[in-house]
Length: 125
Image (cartoon, rainbow, N blue to C red; front, top):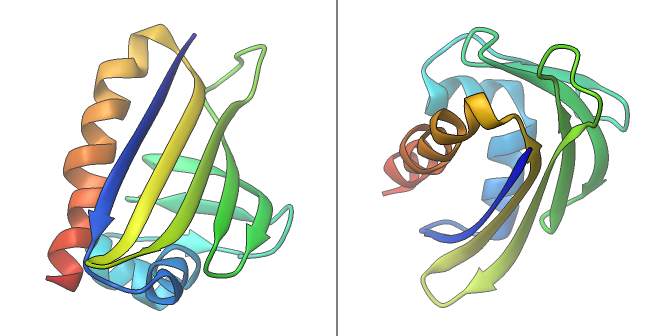
């Protein structure tokens, strides 16, 4: 299992980013793909037509989102913690993704930069 942590700058407010990650309509707009989201503690989500699935563990509006991502039958949960901080250029988006299966690590890291955060940056630019 591997971990990934990185900071990105997104040209939008923390409130806008939070809503973009927890509102089905906005998720659909910036991902361009089928999504399902229940933004409640224990609520499940599916992004990019099921490419990413999991459930919400913590939600702190405009500040923090903690999710469990499902990767089959792995022993330890894969946990994603996203922290949003005000930044002069918008939002500092901190992602900390723990317990990534070794065989999925490169694809997940590329996905964070290219698709996930890249999609948000493109949407708000």
